[in-house]
Length: 194
Image (tube, rainbow, N blue to C red; front, side):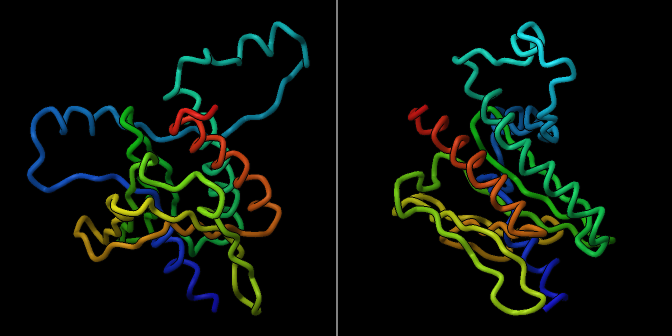
């Protein structure tokens, strides 16, 4: 089961919908995609001024989504420190909300690509994935809205499959408890519900 970690993480990466023959405009948008910074979550002095400095404009949808996904990046960073076999995990999102979760493990690079707008933020769209057996890792999955493009899976730059749900596995249940609310928040922002 421990050998499944890199495999599962590969398939849990977020999605970026694109073709190999992108238009120049699409290539320019892809160039604007930025890795998400790990969430800090700490206020040094706890002052109101410090809180105001860190607050994002409510109309900054892209910034709010990046901030929410920072929790996922932070958990990936912590998991990498515990289990070196997982490789370097990166969460990348562009201004069109195309999401890539990348796992760089030695000579292999796996990616899951999806547009956050294509994920089902409604009730029933998300479910927890328990760690029932020894060696399993807990996580969660979010289904793709019917009729929308699925989660594209890439290995070393080549598309190898497509799934109807995005699966994210984390190091422990506590990590899932921290990531799920932040991920739901990102989906709600993208879908205009928050």
